[in-house]
Amino acid sequence: MNFIKRQVLLPGARKVNVLLPETVCPDITAADNGKGYFFLMSNGTGYIALTDIFALATSLEKDEIIYCPLEVAHIDAYEHHFSELENHYKGIVIFNFNTTKINAKDISTVLKTRIYKETKLTRQIAYSDKRPDIWDVGRRLTVKSAGKLLVISGERAVFTSMAQSCERLSKYGDDSRYNSEREHEHHDWYENTANSVGITFYYWHSKNCLPKEKR
Image 1 (cartoon, helix red, strand yellow):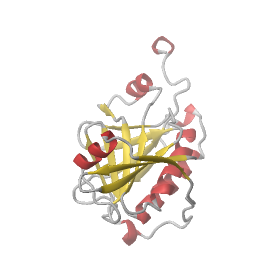
Image 2 (tube, rainbow, N blue to C red; image 1 turned 120 degrees about the vertical axis):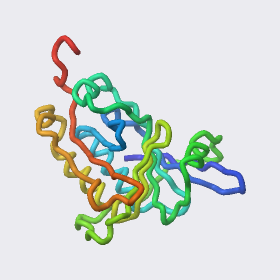
Image 3 (cartoon, rainbow, N blue to C red; image 1 turned 45 degrees about the horizontal axis):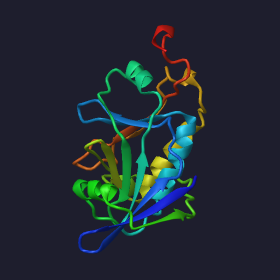
């Protein structure tokens, strides 16, 4: 996956670098159920892309954030099969809270600020195959909404665990028969901080998911 690096200048001469996937995958969506619970959903193709995105998150440097716009192509189908969902987000923002101190207001400002410099990003984004120890990820993940953005902050071990989850879900490929089984990965048990209920990753593929009269 190729990334674009956009540098913006905030008041006080602070430079923030926004890393974006060069190509937006139309199979990824993030949503909530209106009760504070968050969900990330995609098929195998989308989870391949998300594996790279969370792998990149494991190596985020000072004042770097990842911004992944969401342009899901199957919104009607999602709403039909996940009737409990109320809000679909327009983008995901990911950052390491140890290297980047930023709040929701600043994130909104960063994404709206005129770009100072833009370059292509080349960075090794390999991540460990070893499952992080529970004490390395415990109480290290915060997931919250900021308008139409879903904001995920954590540390290297948390993003390693998320990349591993995405890789496992990507192995189901693009096959709607797995929809009924609701294959998923939890990041809402021991990872989440007191200010967050975490997030669950679900597998879902759009092909042949709607009754004929709904297509």
